Image 1 (cartoon, rainbow, N blue to C red):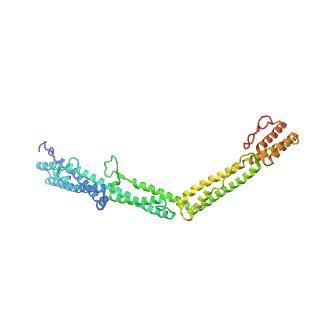
Image 2 (cartoon, rainbow, N blue to C red):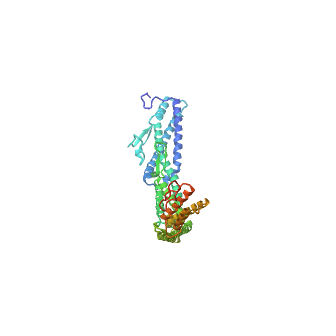
Image 3 (cartoon, rainbow, N blue to C red):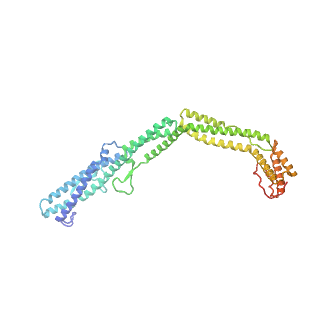
Length: 447
């Protein structure tokens, strides 16, 4: 054979032996891979499954690829066996043997049906539409590797989805059933509570998801970008994760409802107590207002409102919900009522404080007057005529009804000025309006 032959120069015996050893190792590796693919659990599942969608389409092509793989492998095995037989004819191969071996080991010596001859088989790049092909053993190995990688990729992807998602869906479905058993006794039912509607939707979604995963696992596979390794990627759990989060939200809602059922009686008793205290405080404020109007003159006394009947009605509704085990309605009502009841108690206390403010001012003026009188007495000045006269005038104003707070405060301040002049101390400040803070002592002239 000349140098222009496609197979190149005739191989010598050492080159032939090395080529046979290399091709034999490749043959063993390909055979091992094909047997592993044949026994792969994912492939067996695909053979027996009722597939749809993308998986059905890909599996038809993969089945054709696997059939071609065995056809190519048989042809490869036959060619390698022939080459070994030629080499084994004699210890020292003749030139004709070496020419024949060179043709077998380097040339396109294997004629096979092309991918187009097999239904649904993938078409290797550059070989579209051919009914038969001639291959060298090296090209045949490359082609088998290509078909094996694409077939294994499909099988591994489907198996990974089947291994991951159905079991997780089943666990979530079991948790869903436990949640439903907790939900129904507390009124969380479809059409009665939003969480009950969510449970129905999640149930339908999980049923549909499992059917889709079983029949079309590749629809839930995310290939890893930039990866050429077979099976590079991960199962797409987007739908599963969404429903798992939704179920967790429902469980939290049911836990809240259960908590309401357990402590609702105590909460209702506390609410009654808070509203009762608010009512008593308002009643005290109304009584105090009558006293203020009778004892204090020339002052504005705020009107005291009646008890909050709307809150009492809502409290009765809450008790009714509890009697009929309507926990899902009781929970938000109690939350709202607790805040409103606390606000009502604060408002009642503020009302009492505002109503009794004039009495507090009068009490403060009485205390101030007595305090200065005691101070004057300690210095032996209690019998001073001016002091006694001013004290008596202020006392009559503060202990008579109705009391004019502004005039009484001016009288107390005049007594303080007179006492300060006799004692030689700093005189108190000019009085402010009734209800202001107690006057502090500072420099100034007496009235």
